[in-house]
Length: 168
Image (cartoon, rainbow, N blue to C red; front, side):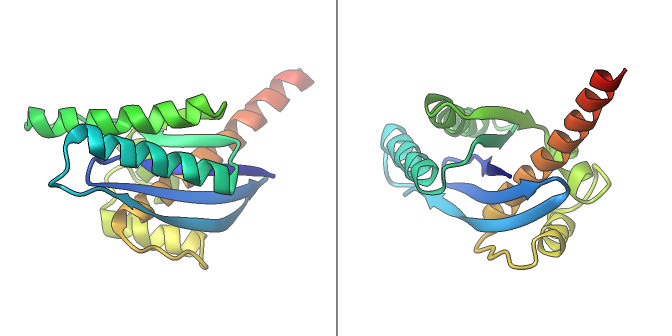
């Protein structure tokens, strides 16, 4: 069994989702968000994110982390703030010795829904189908679970590729 934490970084809301995976089986563990206050400075908000992720890693003891890659949009300031949050989302698991994988939005949608052009509603609906006991308090938490599911599916593919090479 492998425990995966999926992280959807954001400066205002960072979504997180924890699943267990064994072979093709996915089991929901927990999910939620780490929220920061808009009136706080960026450094204060980054401390909240860092402390929150550290607490989650200590509480759930995942062995791997999956994080959504940053996309660049027209608003450079917003992209930069997202980059700050993403840096924390990469740093905290790395400091805890977790294996980290990064996935783009289209790859996540493809793994969960079957199409890279899926809407947020379609992704959320499929997350609920794949993890029927999931409690999804905000879309950010649903996105984080989708990221974890994507990683679980990619792990299985990699294991099949590796076992095929070993047999050859």
